[in-house]
Image (cartoon, rainbow, N blue to C red; front, side, top):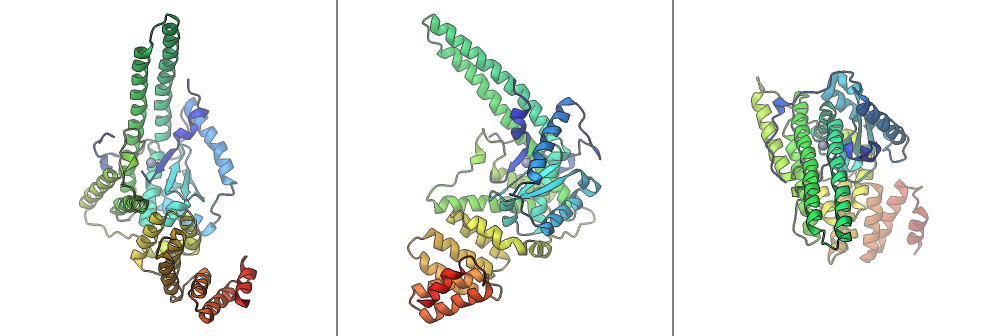
Length: 412
Ligand SMILES: [Zn+2]
């Protein structure tokens, strides 16, 4: 028998936005909230689950992994208020330092959003897409349903497993080969595991459909949902290409808890067209690009540093190029240079030097771009300009942790 605590982790609707049987598209119009305003847990199962998550939430609320940006926190809460109206008060959002493109929703309304997700969004509509998907999990009570489905099926799996062990023992004692018994039991268990995964895929399809409707109702262009999936697929392809591997969508497996990325993107695109066609008179949508850029600006250097530091060159260069579709700036050029410097393949030093030079040509170049440009010039034998560039870095970052080292480089 599976205990509640043992499956708590599995009950969070963790939406690995980086990732079977094809199921029919869920139509946004079919999606309704299964819980009313001010909903409280209805039975012992659910009360227990909320209790466990309340304890987990208390730990997260005091975690040192919180982003710690009151402005971004208010911004995220504002987007949720736009999606849920008065019901936003039933949720709490926690912005957490984690490079993965991911978010999750617990049954008690605790939402976790990773910095890896913030780093990749290009406008408020894309951000709202992810928050809307998570809110949909809450409104549809997916965690509770998932836990009940898992409890039933994992109970059966444990029972079949125990029966198999017994049968094997009896067969061995009788000198017989127990393979057939075990094969049958394993086949039953494999079918049950596939059934659990199919169940969670169906929930993800519901959350996608409901989420796209929430963003459309809030005035965001519904096409933003498929656009962010397109970026996820392109990024995965870029990562595979950079590693010299063939792109393979891990979510295509029947063992995946999520529908295949490409099918998700196509379904979201069809749902968006359906919602736009049903809007009469046609609505004027606003993706909120300027609002997003203003909100993310103070965090962008730190978020990109988190990604580039992973040294997955395919991802780094794709991310920088994707964000630059809205225009190159000093920070993106500096990050491009850093991605080449870390990749360190033949020709990359020259590519990095070019990117740093372009970065410092922008008024908004980060101080670190002057340092990188300075070292690149020194390496190329241009001592005067290299020193000037390092001096610019020290002017702008006199208290930098490496200031003493840079001053030493200036004396040589
Ligand atoms: Zn999800």
